[in-house]
Image (tube, rainbow, N blue to C red):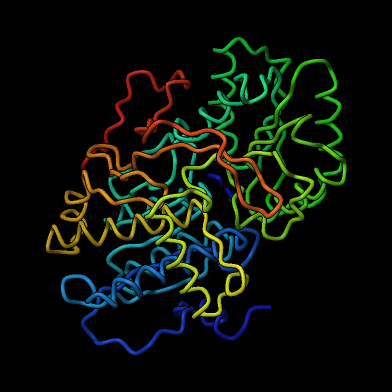
Length: 423
């Protein structure tokens, strides 16, 4: 979703040969292997690398407390390198060759859809930690990121509200793949239901890795000059966000004129951007680092201590947390609880034990895994970019929102039930 939401060393060469990328300490033979399937190179590395480190942090924390079922967790890290077919190959390697009990990974929907048949065929578990377009339910996947009704729809409702500026025209701008196109299909139908005419919706897409946004920003400025309050909804994924936001600043497109709300830009993606010209632009997520809660204070400290101790690039001096990191961490902790409840890592037993699992989320609410649709109940936050690259929360739901994977705004979903079909 999000998104593809989106010169190797010798160790990376080893990955291409089917070996583990991460240099692991010696483990006893009797461990539980955990797969980590994130792009550590290519266009999505800007977003995904830190999720690999989040998994490793959580595994270290669990192992320090005795592991799971009396066994230490052993991470097996591979790099699918922002290459969508390679995701499927690496997934099969993790399950069939490395014998992992579970995998945490993927960012973009195209990568998730690449691996989905593998997890279903081999009856293994994938925890997917990023917001996505919905329109999918699998017995073998737990979706710890947001469905459209937990991010996209509330964000556009906010833009249309008085507090959000009362937008009447919308630019739907995204990376050209399934997550942005499906999300925008849902948003078009939603906007039409709210009385927005087709002429007041501009839709544009760019390829992964796109770097020249000069003409697109110029088109947006022209579209916004035609009389009605305009807002941009961005589903740009990966490292293209850096030139996009730089060009916003270059052309002086301020939030007071044309606010941009992003679904795949958080604290990590803004690290390489001068955020001062972007103050007031928005992002919609289910967590921000700036949220005040005891659970978040603890989460940020854990990450800061781990990042500094491990010398993680970009984080050892300025540790940053974000929404997919929180979703990754919650997923691992819920999986641990489910394994302990099931007293087994068997896929079907863990799936049954995952139903209704809860965990005190850093976002400040108790996070609950839905008993039927494999999605988390999640709060929704809208934050304004601050000069320091953090977000000031300007709107939030009163509590967690139940996911609606099959959107009511897609006509062909009529009659579909948001229940995972057990095979």
